Amino acid sequence: MNKPKLNMIVCVGKDNLIGDKVPEGNGLLWHSMEELNYYKSKTIGNVVLFGENTAKYVPLNLMKKNREVIVLTLDTKIEDIMKKYEESGKDIFICGGYTIYKYFLDNYNIDEIYISKLKPHVEVAKAKNPLYFPDVEKYGYKLISETEYNDFTACIYKK
Ligand SMILES: NC(=O)c1ccc[n+]([C@@H]2O[C@H](COP(=O)([O-])OP(=O)(O)OC[C@H]3O[C@@H](n4cnc5c(N)ncnc54)[C@H](OP(=O)(O)O)[C@@H]3O)[C@@H](O)[C@H]2O)c1
Image (cartoon, rainbow, N blue to C red; front, top):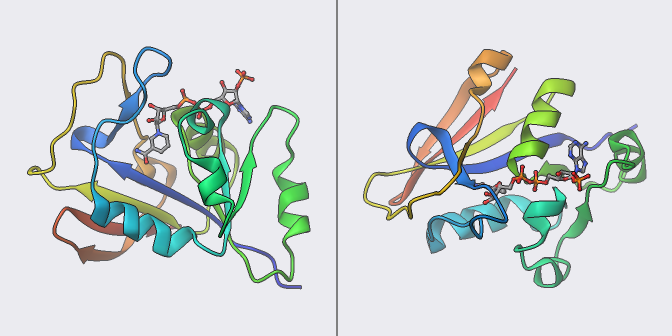
C-alpha cells in the first residue's frame, strides 16, 4: 500500500510570525515571488489542505488547475483523505492557517514540515493581531535540510 505523506508547509517571518488574524487583517503580510515559486514547486501535483479562514483569501480556483484543493471543515476526517489518495502518488500538504497548523501538530505525526524562513530584507507589514507558527522542535521535529535562497532559507523538519 502506497500511503500519501502528510506534510506541512509554511512561510515565517521574525519569531515565526505567519500572519494577521482574519478578519482584522487580510492575512497576508509579505510578498516574495521567489518563495511563492518554492511553494508551488512543492505543492503542484499534490493535495493542499486549507482552513476556512485562509481559504477566504487564497486563489483556490487558480490552485485547482494543478492541485487538489480541500478546505477543511470540522467534519473532515484526515483519515478519509489519506485513504482517498492512497496509490495516487500524491502527497498531502497542510497549508494553514494558524488553527489548522496547531490542530495537526497537536494531533498527528507530520512526515515533513517545510518552513521557509524569510530573510530580514523582505518587507513585512505590521500585524494588528499577529499569529505565530508553533516551535516544531518542541513537538520533537528536527532540522534535516536547509537550503539558502535570496529571500528565505528553506528548512525541512522531520521526527
Ligand atoms: N505564513 C504562512 O505560510 C501562512 C499560511 C496560511 C495561513 N497563514 C495565516 O494564518 C491566518 C489564518 O489562520 P486562522 O487560524 O485564522 O484560520 P484557519 O486555520 O485558516 O482556519 C480556521 C478555521 O477552520 C475551521 N476548521 C476546520 N477544521 C478544523 C479543525 N480540525 N480544527 C479547528 N478548526 C477547524 C474552523 O472554522 P469554524 O470555527 O468556522 O468551524 C476554524 O476557525 C492568516 O493570518 C493567514 O495569513 C499563514
